[in-house]
Image (cartoon, rainbow over all chains, first blue to last red; front, side, top):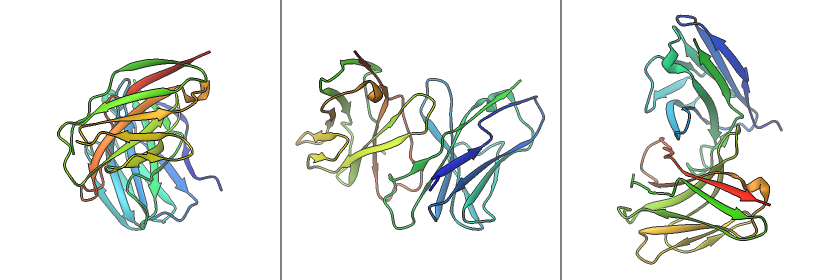
Length: 114
Length: 111
Protein backbone atom coordinates (compact mmCIF):
# COMPACT_ATOMS: atom_id res chain seq x y z
CA UNK A 1 0.00 0.00 0.00
CA UNK A 2 1.94 2.99 -1.31
CA UNK A 3 -0.61 5.61 -0.16
CA UNK A 4 -0.33 8.84 -2.15
CA UNK A 5 2.48 9.13 -4.68
CA UNK A 6 3.48 12.09 -6.83
CA UNK A 7 5.42 12.26 -10.08
CA UNK A 8 7.89 13.88 -10.67
CA UNK A 9 9.65 14.79 -7.42
CA UNK A 10 11.55 17.70 -8.95
CA UNK A 11 11.20 19.71 -12.16
CA UNK A 12 12.68 22.85 -13.67
CA UNK A 13 10.69 24.63 -16.37
CA UNK A 14 11.30 27.69 -18.48
CA UNK A 15 8.68 30.41 -18.62
CA UNK A 16 5.96 29.47 -21.08
CA UNK A 17 6.58 25.73 -20.99
CA UNK A 18 3.86 23.32 -20.01
CA UNK A 19 3.85 20.25 -17.81
CA UNK A 20 1.58 17.84 -15.97
CA UNK A 21 1.99 16.68 -12.38
CA UNK A 22 0.58 13.26 -11.59
CA UNK A 23 -0.93 12.21 -8.29
CA UNK A 24 -1.89 8.60 -7.67
CA UNK A 25 -3.53 6.97 -4.63
CA UNK A 26 -4.19 3.31 -3.97
CA UNK A 27 -6.58 3.74 -1.03
CA UNK A 28 -9.77 3.96 -3.14
CA UNK A 29 -10.39 7.49 -1.85
CA UNK A 30 -13.10 9.57 -3.49
CA UNK A 31 -11.72 13.03 -2.69
CA UNK A 32 -8.43 14.32 -4.07
CA UNK A 33 -6.78 17.72 -3.66
CA UNK A 34 -3.92 19.77 -5.10
CA UNK A 35 -2.19 22.32 -2.82
CA UNK A 36 0.79 24.60 -3.32
CA UNK A 37 3.16 25.73 -0.62
CA UNK A 38 5.41 28.73 -1.04
CA UNK A 39 8.51 29.31 1.11
CA UNK A 40 7.61 30.21 4.68
CA UNK A 41 3.89 29.95 4.03
CA UNK A 42 1.12 27.50 4.67
CA UNK A 43 -0.68 25.42 2.06
CA UNK A 44 -3.18 26.90 -0.36
CA UNK A 45 -5.77 24.81 -2.19
CA UNK A 46 -5.55 24.98 -6.01
CA UNK A 47 -8.22 22.51 -7.21
CA UNK A 48 -9.98 19.50 -5.81
CA UNK A 49 -12.15 16.60 -6.95
CA UNK A 50 -15.01 14.86 -5.19
CA UNK A 51 -15.03 11.91 -7.55
CA UNK A 52 -14.08 10.53 -10.93
CA UNK A 53 -14.93 12.98 -13.70
CA UNK A 54 -15.58 15.94 -11.38
CA UNK A 55 -13.32 18.85 -10.41
CA UNK A 56 -13.75 22.18 -8.64
CA UNK A 57 -11.72 25.33 -8.03
CA UNK A 58 -10.00 26.02 -4.77
CA UNK A 59 -8.44 29.16 -3.36
CA UNK A 60 -5.79 29.81 -6.06
CA UNK A 61 -6.90 28.08 -9.32
CA UNK A 62 -5.65 30.59 -11.91
CA UNK A 63 -2.99 29.24 -14.26
CA UNK A 64 -3.78 25.60 -13.48
CA UNK A 65 -6.07 22.94 -14.90
CA UNK A 66 -6.92 19.52 -13.51
CA UNK A 67 -8.44 16.26 -14.64
CA UNK A 68 -9.75 13.19 -12.83
CA UNK A 69 -10.34 10.61 -15.54
CA UNK A 70 -9.67 7.69 -13.20
CA UNK A 71 -10.57 7.49 -9.53
CA UNK A 72 -7.02 6.79 -8.47
CA UNK A 73 -5.36 9.58 -10.46
CA UNK A 74 -5.55 13.38 -10.23
CA UNK A 75 -3.55 15.40 -12.76
CA UNK A 76 -2.48 19.02 -12.35
CA UNK A 77 -1.54 20.86 -15.53
CA UNK A 78 0.34 24.08 -16.13
CA UNK A 79 -0.30 25.23 -19.69
CA UNK A 80 2.13 28.16 -19.71
CA UNK A 81 4.37 28.18 -16.67
CA UNK A 82 5.24 31.46 -14.96
CA UNK A 83 7.91 32.20 -12.32
CA UNK A 84 5.08 32.87 -9.83
CA UNK A 85 4.25 29.18 -10.05
CA UNK A 86 7.57 28.21 -8.52
CA UNK A 87 6.45 26.27 -5.47
CA UNK A 88 6.15 22.88 -3.83
CA UNK A 89 2.99 21.08 -4.90
CA UNK A 90 1.26 18.59 -2.64
CA UNK A 91 -1.48 16.18 -3.51
CA UNK A 92 -3.84 14.75 -0.89
CA UNK A 93 -6.76 12.35 -0.76
CA UNK A 94 -9.48 11.29 1.67
CA UNK A 95 -12.43 8.93 1.92
CA UNK A 96 -15.92 10.13 1.07
CA UNK A 97 -17.17 8.93 4.42
CA UNK A 98 -14.14 10.14 6.31
CA UNK A 99 -13.64 13.34 8.23
CA UNK A 100 -12.52 16.34 6.18
CA UNK A 101 -9.35 16.72 8.21
CA UNK A 102 -8.27 13.14 7.62
CA UNK A 103 -6.39 13.89 4.44
CA UNK A 104 -3.41 11.82 3.38
CA UNK A 105 -0.67 13.79 1.69
CA UNK A 106 1.89 12.82 -0.90
CA UNK A 107 5.61 13.65 -0.64
CA UNK A 108 5.39 16.73 -2.87
CA UNK A 109 6.75 17.96 -6.21
CA UNK A 110 9.28 20.77 -6.13
CA UNK A 111 8.80 22.95 -9.24
CA UNK A 112 11.06 25.81 -10.30
CA UNK A 113 10.10 28.08 -13.19
CA UNK A 114 12.93 30.23 -14.56
CA UNK B 1 -13.13 29.87 9.52
CA UNK B 2 -11.81 31.46 12.69
CA UNK B 3 -8.37 33.06 12.56
CA UNK B 4 -5.61 31.41 14.58
CA UNK B 5 -2.46 32.85 16.10
CA UNK B 6 0.60 30.74 16.87
CA UNK B 7 4.14 31.67 17.93
CA UNK B 8 6.47 31.42 14.94
CA UNK B 9 9.00 29.19 16.68
CA UNK B 10 9.69 27.21 19.86
CA UNK B 11 12.46 25.03 21.23
CA UNK B 12 12.09 21.90 23.35
CA UNK B 13 14.62 19.55 24.95
CA UNK B 14 14.50 15.94 23.81
CA UNK B 15 12.48 13.80 26.22
CA UNK B 16 10.60 16.74 27.67
CA UNK B 17 7.00 17.71 26.95
CA UNK B 18 6.45 20.17 24.11
CA UNK B 19 3.52 22.51 24.68
CA UNK B 20 2.41 24.38 21.56
CA UNK B 21 -0.18 27.15 22.07
CA UNK B 22 -2.80 28.42 19.67
CA UNK B 23 -5.16 31.36 20.08
CA UNK B 24 -8.50 31.28 18.30
CA UNK B 25 -10.57 33.92 20.08
CA UNK B 26 -13.17 34.20 17.27
CA UNK B 27 -13.99 30.49 17.17
CA UNK B 28 -17.66 29.64 16.63
CA UNK B 29 -19.61 27.04 18.56
CA UNK B 30 -19.59 24.47 15.77
CA UNK B 31 -15.93 24.86 14.78
CA UNK B 32 -13.34 22.23 15.57
CA UNK B 33 -9.67 22.73 16.41
CA UNK B 34 -7.34 20.61 14.28
CA UNK B 35 -3.61 20.14 14.51
CA UNK B 36 -1.35 19.08 11.66
CA UNK B 37 2.42 18.97 11.40
CA UNK B 38 4.83 19.08 8.51
CA UNK B 39 8.26 17.59 8.81
CA UNK B 40 10.83 19.16 6.52
CA UNK B 41 10.32 18.24 2.84
CA UNK B 42 7.34 16.00 3.60
CA UNK B 43 3.59 16.40 3.23
CA UNK B 44 1.47 17.52 6.18
CA UNK B 45 0.34 14.91 8.69
CA UNK B 46 -2.86 15.00 10.73
CA UNK B 47 -2.23 14.83 14.51
CA UNK B 48 -5.43 15.37 16.48
CA UNK B 49 -8.64 17.36 16.65
CA UNK B 50 -11.23 18.42 19.23
CA UNK B 51 -14.41 20.41 19.75
CA UNK B 52 -14.56 21.29 23.45
CA UNK B 53 -13.31 18.31 25.43
CA UNK B 54 -9.66 17.48 25.86
CA UNK B 55 -8.49 14.75 23.53
CA UNK B 56 -5.61 12.28 23.53
CA UNK B 57 -4.31 9.83 20.98
CA UNK B 58 -1.09 7.93 20.40
CA UNK B 59 0.66 11.02 19.08
CA UNK B 60 -0.43 13.88 21.32
CA UNK B 61 -2.91 15.49 23.68
CA UNK B 62 -5.09 18.49 22.92
CA UNK B 63 -6.18 20.79 25.73
CA UNK B 64 -8.94 23.28 24.88
CA UNK B 65 -9.79 26.04 27.35
CA UNK B 66 -13.31 26.20 28.73
CA UNK B 67 -14.14 29.32 26.71
CA UNK B 68 -12.59 27.61 23.62
CA UNK B 69 -10.62 30.74 22.77
CA UNK B 70 -7.28 28.95 22.95
CA UNK B 71 -5.80 25.47 22.93
CA UNK B 72 -2.51 23.69 23.55
CA UNK B 73 -1.05 20.73 21.73
CA UNK B 74 1.10 18.59 23.99
CA UNK B 75 3.74 16.14 22.78
CA UNK B 76 4.44 14.32 26.05
CA UNK B 77 7.99 13.11 25.32
CA UNK B 78 9.38 15.01 22.38
CA UNK B 79 11.96 13.29 20.18
CA UNK B 80 14.25 14.68 17.48
CA UNK B 81 11.80 13.27 14.91
CA UNK B 82 9.13 15.65 16.24
CA UNK B 83 11.05 18.63 14.83
CA UNK B 84 8.52 20.10 12.39
CA UNK B 85 6.16 22.97 11.69
CA UNK B 86 2.91 22.56 13.62
CA UNK B 87 -0.30 24.05 12.27
CA UNK B 88 -3.40 24.87 14.30
CA UNK B 89 -6.53 25.09 12.14
CA UNK B 90 -10.07 25.99 13.13
CA UNK B 91 -12.95 25.09 10.85
CA UNK B 92 -16.50 23.83 10.89
CA UNK B 93 -17.88 20.76 9.15
CA UNK B 94 -19.81 22.94 6.71
CA UNK B 95 -16.83 25.07 5.70
CA UNK B 96 -16.53 23.47 2.29
CA UNK B 97 -13.52 21.64 1.00
CA UNK B 98 -10.79 24.09 1.85
CA UNK B 99 -8.22 23.19 4.49
CA UNK B 100 -6.24 26.39 4.94
CA UNK B 101 -2.89 26.32 6.69
CA UNK B 102 -1.47 29.48 8.24
CA UNK B 103 2.12 30.15 9.27
CA UNK B 104 2.33 27.55 12.05
CA UNK B 105 4.94 27.10 14.80
CA UNK B 106 8.36 25.77 13.95
CA UNK B 107 9.25 23.38 16.79
CA UNK B 108 12.91 22.52 17.19
CA UNK B 109 13.61 19.55 19.47
CA UNK B 110 17.18 19.69 20.71
CA UNK B 111 19.32 16.90 22.18
